[in-house]
Image (tube, rainbow, N blue to C red; front, top):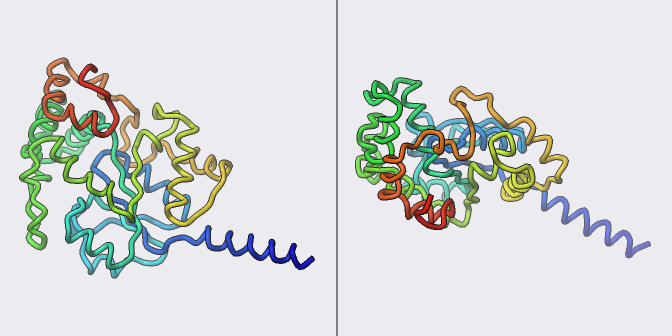
Length: 270
């Protein structure tokens, strides 16, 4: 009987330590890579509500972190510059970084700029906007900023899509960050697979200190697709319907190596 009790107590101890939700959570995403999809996953896992950074999606302030309540988590497009990283480390945040195929991100961002009439670029035809987003981020008025409080954020240096991604990718190497992709979490309705989606939901839960099974992951998965203000299509490979041969050539010249680095292509033959 005693041995059974010891086994039960050991199991109880393991269970309790496994399902201890980390108290401070944030997400850092490249714009137009599935931020709302990831937000919904975390809300459904934890019951907490995502809140923005208030002053700018690009940087985080101590004042903002001090206002975040226990039932909230932080949503940002913050790049991993030293000021952002140090602040999150100091407050013991655990994070998730999200990106997607840069070609699909370009298309999604172009349509976003057009729909919400952002800056002056929205006046161009959609194909011209796509070309500009691939090659010259300086034309995107809302991205061309230099934050006075944090001079190391200077997006005027990000001239094209590769440089924009390169500014975010160091998040992948941070020990407190779990990296996921749009392709893994979007599921079959967005061109992914159910198996990969369920596994990734469980991976994210585990990173946050939670343990869930396939049935619990399925309950979350069925609630994810669509239903956000900025949702347009949510499909893997959407660039295939939009890129002209000229845009494909331009993208290969500028960011072909990025696709290989991220595993979206093996070579330039696409």
